[in-house]
Each structure stands twice: as C-alpha cells, then as structure tokens.
Amino acid sequence: MASSAPACKQPSRREIHDAIDSLGRLTELFQHRREQLAEGAGVTEQQWRFLEEISTESFIPSMFARRQESTPAAVSKVLRQLLDKSLVSVSVSKTDGRQRDYVLTAKGRRTLERLGQEREHAIRDIWADVDPSELSAFTSFSGELARRLEEYASRVHEKE
Image (cartoon, rainbow, N blue to C red):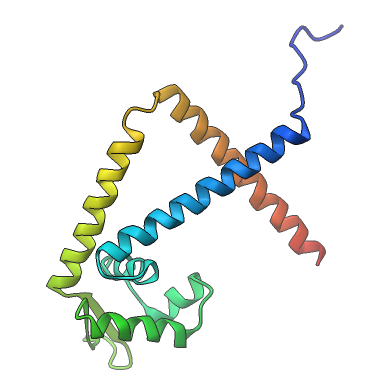
C-alpha cells in the first residue's frame, strides 16, 4: 500500500549553498560581535574566554589547554597578559604546592560583569522579538545540523 505522506522535496544546490553562505555570515558576525564586546572591555576575545573559565573556580591551566587544543605555553602567555592587566591573581595552591590557583581580581570580576551586561543588551535587542516558533525551529534545525556535521567529521576522520 502506498504511503499517504507527501514526499519530502530535496533542496536545490542553490538553496543549499545559500544556506551555507548564511551560516558563514552568521558565524562571522557572531565572532566579530564577540571581538567588539571584548575590545570595549579592554580585553581580547581569547582573554574573555579565560576570564569566563577562571571565574568557574575549577580552572586548571593544563586541562584548559587540552580542551582548547592549545599548548601550555600559549595558555601561560594569556595568563601573563591577564596578570599584567590586573584582571587575575595567582597564588600557590593550598592543596598542592605544585599547582597555582588563579582567581579573578575585583577588576577582573567587573570586566566580566560588563561583558555579560553588554551581551545581555545585545541578546535583548536582537533576539527578544523573534517569533518563538521560528526560534524553536531554528534551534531544532541548528542542533540537527551540528549533529550531522559532527557525525560527518567523525566518519571522515576515521577514514584518514
């Protein structure tokens, strides 16, 4: 017996390329906006990521380097920059003398708070009046697309 469900129309190559172009544009705009926010607060986007991580109180430089696929030297360089800007302080760990504890200074907390406030302003101005059903559809689609990209990357990596 034939199915009564309508066949799903396949997108054209042009539609696919338009979607890829839109995704690329969104990616660039999000990155540019993060850089603008960071610059406005007197830090780089990379330093902002470090401040966010250090604020969690579970910051371990070597683990952060592995997660970010970075070198310990690169992490140390950014930590020195943050120390020079008086955004973080460092002390010998009370539990392990071989480790260092990094914490945000009052200036670092204010900087991170400012970044959070600016980000919230942007979210409110850009996202607040988006139709909830469109936002839900976008969230579902982007999540599925991310899953497909991750799966594809994994398969391609296995072949190499």
